[in-house]
Length: 318
Image (cartoon, rainbow, N blue to C red):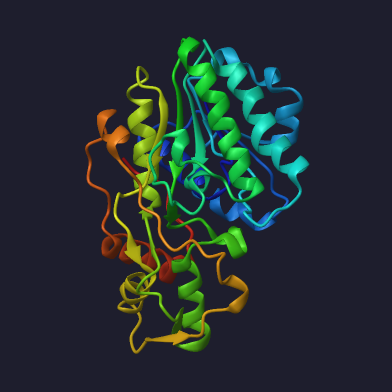
């Protein structure tokens, strides 16, 4: 059995879909439906059971860890604006340690880390403690678990892989609200106003935007190579401007105009202006596929947004 925590969420549900595409349906989804609309991301997926993460955390042994083929730990509080450090560490750090402990010596453990551990990126985006300086408690929770994993790795007898996701976008993120990708927000902005608004200076704000199918593919690459462990960046290695992203999106909406608006004063000095994954370690680990271009990723996502509001409506096929 494959366990996917956060399996009703954005990357998690796409991972379940990726497993389904391989013909794997023996999947246990661990999540919560407090945001009830998250069930829409599960409608087209095949899995054997859905368990609330709090019930799972209370008695994970009740779900027979001896039968686990691998655990994809994608569940977390991903709200970078959350300020309750006790809650954040409980959900993102302590839960992760508990789950890792159940997997060590038993099955592969692949988990979601975050490029937010690099802070403003002044020291680069390498998987190196010298580059890491988290700026909020969400990033700190990911940083703390990565550091814990690094201490465990030398003695680990089974695979442990952390993936530092950069700016992931794509279908199934509807429930994320303010944390949803810019493409999702652009789509709804165009529907409401027939315009696409970007901040002044957006040609100079550049991020590493990675299509969710690529994030899934990197996970499955490591699943196929259980001998490879470590903490790796998961991005394209390319930094694209927000203006380029806006223009790539606008091309799919007839008559859409890209307009600029003043940069909010409250964001001055708090806006991450640049991210770009260093892929040296990922490539050294054997992942040699090209990442989806911004144009192709946006086109694929906009098609799903237009067709079904952003959800996959049809089951995955091999």
